[in-house]
Length: 401
Image 1 (cartoon, one colour):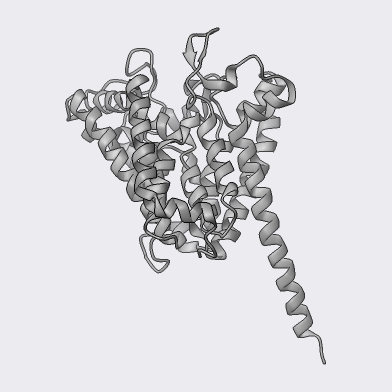
Image 2 (tube, one colour):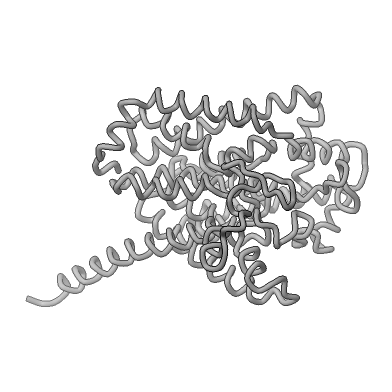
């Protein structure tokens, strides 16, 4: 799929080891200066421990004031964490996440048809993406979910097991369910069915094993985004958050449902078309970003789907600045650059600075959703022109001489 290599890409290939060493060293320095609490993996562990001990998962916090915001099966999924001492678990989580990140980059690079030397370059870039850095700092599960989907959907199309990874990812965090819609648009009927069946099995398992599972599903806990965070938080990069910051926090969810529904359908459709054209890496990346955008609440660290998108764009023979711009969007918001919002005393990066106002603030503070929309428009137009050209050629061939 690699159409051409421009001078910048050629330089990156030739100096891949140096690029990786510098980026990795800088990432380690950043982690040393601004260490992360790995608080989220502690919540996963606490949720599993609460389930083991028969304590409530959803009617009270599981760790300090922090609530368990994941489906019931996730507590079972996290069971191994409850069996490991906290310091060992945190160390293993970070090491495992870094190893998995390398494997994800390598698999995406292979499927995209790029040279092996670029694995180091993309791994270095991934370390500096804000979603990756924050996922590592907080001990988040996003890299694991990305891995489940990448290794699932990038396997041989003839595999009977395609869809299992998507179903498992959705069992831990609901947003990957959108991949089922993408698979339907891609006409991968079997994979979509396997994903739904896998997810259904985990729901039944949760109902059987977790006492509060029925309350989670029937009581509407799964749709309560306030358990995740306040929608007006600048770190919420979803369309819901964007609209709330523009319109205030309206009582009606109709604007978000209409806008989010439109983006969900458009993103799934474009991803399906791209998949049918053979670019699975770009397709799954676009669908993952769409799932983040239409989620009721989407922290910046949920957007690890920038990784396959950047790799796929680099493989399409585009000028280096196209994937470069997407990379800059992915690394910039909100905490990669470490200035402090002195009004609240927290690290939120440049999006909180007062010099941002008006239209500039609207775009910068919602840069992830705007990046997705721009990608969907650009990719949709590209494939739309190809489809129209193909239709014209077919019509011309069908005309009698």
